[in-house]
Length: 115
Length: 111
Image (cartoon, rainbow over all chains, first blue to last red; front, side, top):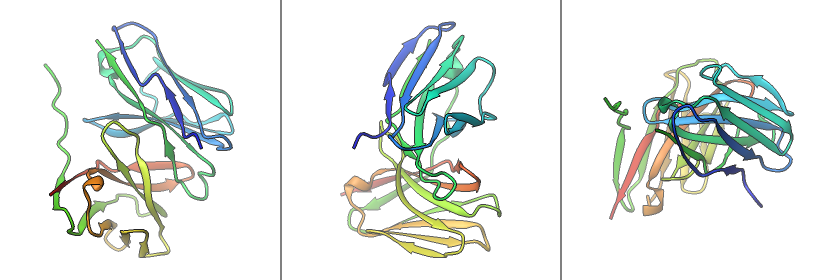
């Protein structure tokens, strides 16, 4: 079975450019999460969706960050404009029933470097 | 200047020995706990979970212990193998669908 699929795996961009990260959750999962991982702050929850609806976006750093989930099989995390401090590994995770188990299935991550 | 990252606690274990990884959680209302393993260049992977109505749960080569009195969680790995080298995170769930991750512990298995 395919797990959570993220793209791109690596992105290097210049400050000010727009960055779009993509995620395909596991088929049948109804919750999707975006995390950011850095050495300084560890794993931080940015936003999560349930049934394609954003439930909690309190972790989104600022207005430069936005996330969408137009359907059950696709989500994007966009940063515009990007800044060097956005450099991190961004993980997407999905869950079949976050209410009962909380177990998340993570993708391999998108490593973003903003120069 | 360049920011200096936090140094993860590191546990060095000899191959074949048992490992114990500790975690202190913060929220007394948390009712569900998970241990994740993250290998270099990969996403975190579920190892084992435990609910707050239990104090011990066993899996294959792993045991999780929960002490709610002191808000402490531990992961025991029996007969540690080189493939167990990774960063281990504990996570607590304090509300519906929202896990809070700890800082992680780096486990290094030496031959």
